[in-house]
Length: 550
Ligand code: NA7
Image (tube, rainbow, N blue to C red; front, side, top):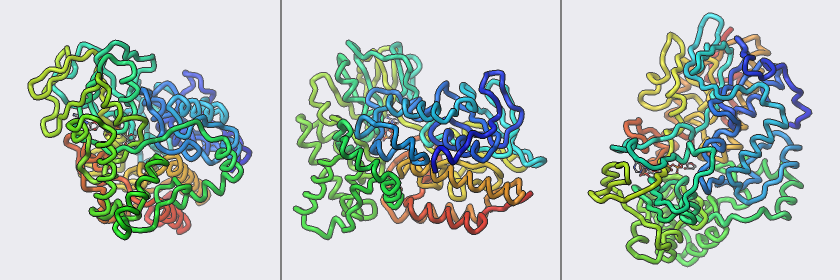
């Protein structure tokens, strides 16, 4: 598809604040990469569409996550839209892994280039959406009391958009600056001369810690679970490589579509068991991938996520790296993770382990005990106060379901989504929910989403939704709802696939285990290409597993 394929659609209005449509064909919640592309597709279908965005800019994840060191862990040439050949030819990435400011510039460029802003309402937080059987429409209400009626409601709300603020006694009493990585201030934050504490050692912390350490007077890292990270070996984007990819971009995209996680065709998974080779060959395979850097490390062998013994070899390889890099043996051992590698999403870093060799960087192990409390002056662990001027909460997100469940979404007969999902999310294909007609979830639980290159899987979702709506219109239908049996079978399928792997074996956010009280269910589906084919078959079969009505 090219830009020329999609002439500007009618849109609901001219984008002035007073321009609030009472009725649209499609309401899209979120102006991240999913919401922007959904708007683009809806317009091309001549639908009256509107995007409701809580922030005051586009970019979603990259709008909110402005913490120091934030960058994508998928290569830039892959983590980008493929719907417009002209766009992907024109845009120039500067680095192998794009930093957050560049990703945000890219999002803004797309919004400008396709004139999306006129149909986006910023600072517009959706508080509720209630299904109205009469008329087959959603009544959407915003936090500031505006209402609109939409035939279709697309939740493009992102998988990691509701922050997980830790419940720690006294946290609000802290006298210094306190920032969550997922809600980082838009103004510059200075660490110079400050005693900074970071709570958490997930991907956000692992990216931020080396950068904060450069300026801070001291840095204290509070670690509950040690984590695996592989080097990014980030660098300026190789111009010759960029030219090669751009010379055959569609073919490159097509190859990535065939990959298990929808990325990395340049470094495919090696189709051999880690246990089928000699220890020397295994070590060499890990070392080769370590030197390349990035998430491709886990593709060194084909059984790292399904066989504990195979996984243990990769885990030990990384632990040995830590032991070699971190000079103090006690700190090194504390930094060595014990869970299977990849069970929590592995991180991609730039100098994380070596940062702990700096004399002003301290690691505080809080495993098993947690943080006792926060006082105005610092953080108390095991009775000892660690004095701090600034606190960084790198404590992650209420992933995949958090944002949807914080809204008051009610389906047929007023059933709240919170009630429907009280024992974990139930969806069909991660796209539809029985009892919630005409509602689509982009990258919803039950779809590969966070286990893929999100830019690939969200475009696949948006395309599927757009085609589905086009089909309904062509058939004169006004209502589509997932069949409860299809939904039940799908959830069983998602779990059955996960149970054959090592993924459910640790306290990851994939399982909701990071949020106190959240039901523990493995939420994403493992395996992108098979999923994409299933979605295509469902569509070709006239939307099997969905009930269509007029
Ligand atoms: P993550 O990966 O969920 O990491 C959050 C970190 O915060 C992790 O180390 C947690 O420890 C820790 N945490 C969470 N709550 C607490 C409390 N109450 N006390 C102490 N420590 C806590 O979030 P990120 O933002 O780093 O990354 C999310 C994704 O974004 C990442 O996977 C990439 O896909 C991009 P735990 O491991 O739960 O013991």
